[in-house]
Length: 423
Image 1 (cartoon, rainbow, N blue to C red):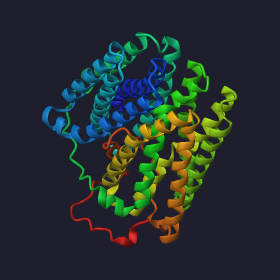
Image 2 (cartoon, rainbow, N blue to C red):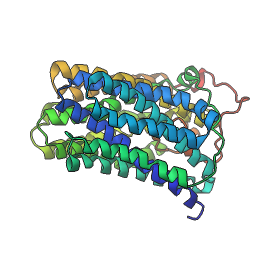
Image 3 (cartoon, rainbow, N blue to C red):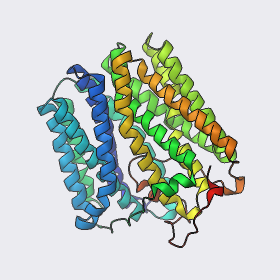
Image 4 (cartoon, one colour):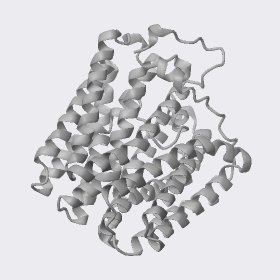
């Protein structure tokens, strides 16, 4: 435990940031609906957030090399905090879309700085414990912060002030904690074409999950509000879906370690699709029914990213763990840019239930692709199959933090994989 103690300030900062970021996504949807913004407008705000996030992932390493960890973190946190207050001072769709783009850029940079710092400070023998703590903080802070909305209300200034306070407080442990300023992480060559050739199925899976998960996180509060839920029920609805994915992810991952991952991916996607269909056709009757159905949906929808990434890593050289997962997160971000606006456009024409109908359609397409790939390529042999690791989509640096003992960044001399190792 003593070796982890220096990392505690960074983990505290992570809690503030993760909570503030998760709270902002839900609040934007709820407050936007109260202000009369259409679902397509709210969806476009989600699209701008993920566009900023993608740009931030690509730009932050250059910023860190120029000014270091502390200054990068301080500048981005200050911009994100000010942008949060501007959301309530200027209630306008254009301003909100612009601020969501800027905050997306900032949060991508903040998570990258923090995870880079954690990675430089953690020892291999502590890596599993730090990852476990980080995931607990992620789930706890994101879900816990959501309940500030019914406490402070979505219609006033106070909730925006609380978000700004949370982002600003993340500066305190970073500024007063570990005084080291490690080197900026080495750039990972983002060879998306190569990673696609390594695993078309893993790449497509991350894009599909980006479309659906971003649509859910951006628009599920709008869905819940439009079917008549109270603010407290809306928050519970969002949290239940997230918690379901956190609980079921490891059992599914363990099963995929022992079985052909594509079969687990097929079953998981099928259950996510069926749950989405049931919500589309049966939900809206009682809050309890909605909670139960979205728990089942989240249980199977949320782990799909990690399952897709695990399958892609099985197909890659053992030294390409960081390379592959950085590229997969960018594939996810590309899908996440498209998801909210596409789903909100469908909701605009066919009503709130169309959100889950849209996601069911994406899952059905992915199911067809999985079945096709299973027919044209044999399963990964058991002796080539790695251990499942649950991955967060917070930054490309998370792959460095989560890499297994003995994994390294891809060596320049690593032999290129030929077509025989594709899906």
